[in-house]
Image (cartoon, rainbow, N blue to C red; front, side, top):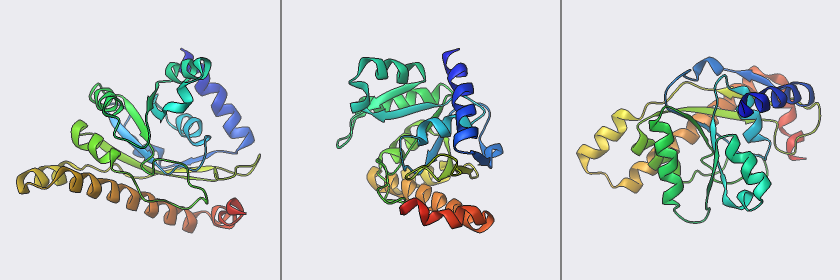
Length: 217
């Protein structure tokens, strides 16, 4: 119930203040475990991505946000759980895998931290491990307009086709590929798909292309 109420409130706020526009949401599976993997520009990404989706989604957030008991309670009520940055947090990775195997949707930002200039960054390998251990598909998403957001400047979220890594994983196991190499291959492909979504958006949405430079000013 708490999630549904928050979803309604944030969605109303997003449509009025950020004129939120969502494209490609039909690519998101309605049921079953799935990772929604997006670029990361600001703290607004998490709530805006959540209200853009037709189903509840869990979130991994940096552990520093859970130091405040009130904020921690709020995050957990919305399906969030912490991850320690700068090291391999096996507990967080296992929690993510367990939730995905239970049929839940999970947002994951492969860059690992917010972009300082709005440009796409190199991905971290964490998402690769989660994909391999959970076996779920990944839906790439490009979020435009949250770098230095301003009221009434439009935010657009563009979802791509689900990526199934089953063949790559099976081939890697047969060939004895090192796990880290496989993780790197997976996260590299995900970021390439996010970059492709960005290019598509710039070509289809003249307003987005016009605001691309303003977001970095």
